[in-house]
Length: 87
Image (cartoon, one colour):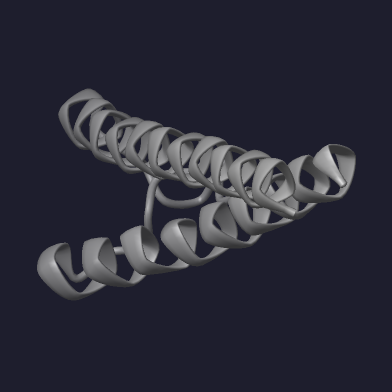
């Protein structure tokens, strides 16, 4: 069951990362009026300041999501282990 919980935690982490990326992109677009600087569009010049700001915000959100997903997985494993000891 530990493997199932770890796989579930990984899936939740991936889904949360995808949702977090979409939220950061949407907030960036609403606040700046420009698309996020991801290097896909070479037609639109991106300043170094905006690229670094976007990278910092995106990395921060990603780190927070990773920490929360890991804590949730560890909490679920601990809870499962306690419930097995009771039974």
